[in-house]
Image 1 (tube, one colour):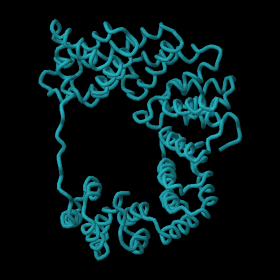
Image 2: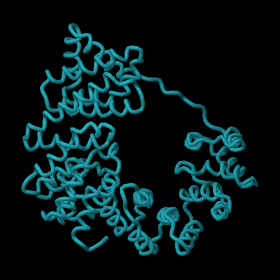
Image 3: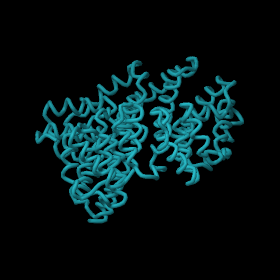
Image 4: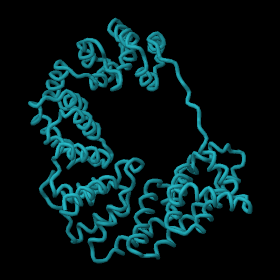
Length: 451
């Protein structure tokens, strides 16, 4: 990472890391970068992490005039073009809502209410399609926001609106309708309490066909769905599929339930097969952490050098789940010849203390980008997987903590650092400002205990 203060701030802002506040300055260059973050979804995976809105809101408040950031956000959010950008509309909704809830700027409430009505009008008039599905998801997000900050009378209006939508889709099974609004229904239960909500919905269902329809779909969520019990997969079935190029990822993952004798049989079939494409399909059985290759790995190493692309890539994938000195030495040799993210993951999985400086050297050259084009996320994930067994050094954990752009990964790293008693007072304080809500809560609790 560059020693330049602006570059450091940019990295930590993109990461949603609380250390960004340490490097923030209020000059125009920093202000424009913060504005960019306020207007765009910067989460590595918003569905897993949540939006970065709280983080960017707090950065915006470090400047004298927060309207410099809020007004362009309102303008972008109000533009119908944003309706096609699902994750950005989630981010902007959260960002604007923070000014209403936290700063008391109630003018922003009408902005969210207006967008809610706009999206509601769309779902009531659009024919169902992939695009309409995204609009429904955005509408659900707005509906959750609206019911969280209004009285129950306003919530009843939202329940009625959704019930009217359900009535419009009268030929759609309840299970399909609930699939679109299960997040909303769970949020409503959390906001108002299950018993209170049940009582009020039953009461208002008497005089409103819309709420009656909403209530019916909502209650259908409480039904127990039978889980299909699949028989244990057998070697014969898997080998037959491999012979016919019909192996799916589900077939591979289901092998975790197979008998050990079946796993051994598939491994032996791989070793004896001569056709490279069939060999690759047989080897794919061992491209899961749940079923690593159980026999001698010499043949897999040789397959990783194959001229057949399918066999070569499958072999490299399978090696990622194997742990032995032969695989370790192979990864070191390949990395010294030519850098590969796959080989770096394999080396981390087979970590030796003597590898520490070598791995750090490769990590420091690895670009960290939100698109994950360099494959950094897999490398960080492997550091976390290996750290579970206390096999990763402090230096590698700290590197992952400072560099990952995924706050879910950073939360696991936070927990590991805490377990090893490696969190400093400064780290705890910066984590209070992290974009990840769970990290903020954990850091705040630790901070209060130390006071």
